[in-house]
Image (cartoon, rainbow, N blue to C red):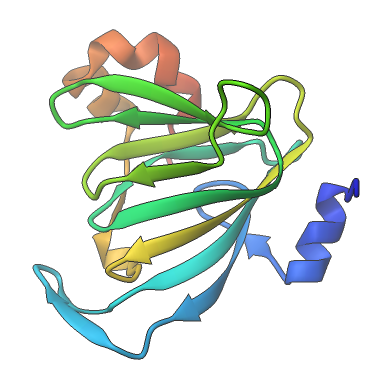
Length: 163
């Protein structure tokens, strides 16, 4: 079934996400765990949507591990940048060579973008331990240029504009 991105926003009650795209938290575990940042839910989950109006998820990192599952649409490319400067990409989609699942360890910089003419990608994410904004950080352009200058040409367009 071909469902336009706008209908997913309405159907799932999604709101604009600070990273780009749209999201809605759909689960927060009542159990908690101790983390370096304090008590966190054991797990949380969101629906996350990129579309042609908001086709990128800006470069950021989280303290927690995040599991990504493509639900509809795509392809969507995820860029992963480790602290030691290793840059990799994985494309979630249904074509040969694409994946339906991506595991991003905590502390890894991550960005996403629609590719190959995709008009949307609906991804569900599970965060372990659960997401807290205190554990989230955006990459700045000066940080990218200073710490990972070799990747500036590839990732510059995925850095959130300065506030």
